[in-house]
Length: 472
View 1: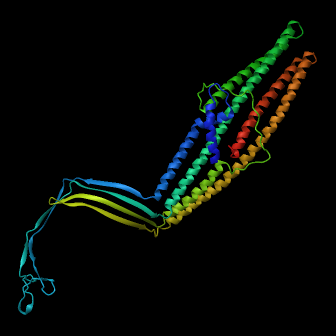
View 2 (view 1 turned 30 degrees about the horizontal axis):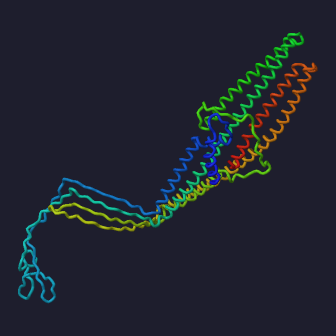
View 3 (view 1 turned 90 degrees about the horizontal axis):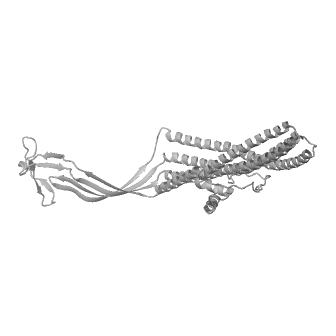
């Protein structure tokens, strides 16, 4: 399918410059213009672009993330406190061990002298006058760079990335499907124009035939060989022919505007179409293609794969998560009694591990729900696949019927033309009535019209079959 799309794009880019205003448009040029200018195709391209960028975004989750951060704090509030003063005990050094010992007064027997409060009495005391502390937060700021790297997320990152890959593939298939639908619309518009143009030619030929007959009848009436009633019969048929011609011309005008709409051209564009239907493409009607090439079927397959990844993604929410983070920063500020306390850089590292233990069956139930959605997608694929097969068989049957219809209407047209020739000779020789001759003309017109319609139906049924078989 990708190779076919590349070929189609190259063909479109080469073919588009070949059609200019006033030049005959071919079916291939009509398709190329429709694919180039159709809004649905543009939307499909944008959807593909969105899927591609989404895929790149999820791929980035495998790599470490770096961030710059900064904070600034200004506050005119000051926090004040006081450490009260007082007398502090002293210590002396033991000459033998160097250990600091309480410098207490010793009494008789070497025991410490106890004061009235029950505490030992020291030989010396140091006086601590007390300190007033003032904290100032103004102009405190910090800045740093951090890095985070997931190590194991229970399969969350890989599942999300695979889902993005599937989404990108679905966008490709949706673009293929849109191309096929636009091509079918282009074929419908193109061959409808060709059909209505052929019907105009038929209506003109039928009108000319009746005008010639009217002239012959008028001449015969003037010399008394025909009745006035015969001329009125011809006039009635001629009026009907003029109405049919007008309807065909109006239909052709609307068909041209619809063709301009499908191909993205202005309504007043001068489009020249072939004078007749060209050779019909031969098909092997005995061998029916399968639906495996249809983008719709491939999209159903991708939907199942997407649901499988959703099950894994749901399961990852209840698996252990392990990650590491590192930060290197600088902090400045926080003054104490007009002396700055913070003015340094620091590095920190963090390892984070989270292991879910018990969630009252939440994980199990969510996983079962995701698996149920996957089973629903599988059943939907089977049901829609059967409908696609039926659609393919129906399209094939209609194509075979159209091919047979073309052959039969072509034979009927040849027989009607021969019947008209014989009837004209018999009428001119007086062996056939005017009504019988006009009936032969009507049969010829009807056979010709059916032949034109059968050619148009065959062309369209070929496109419908190709779409149903995934060949567009």
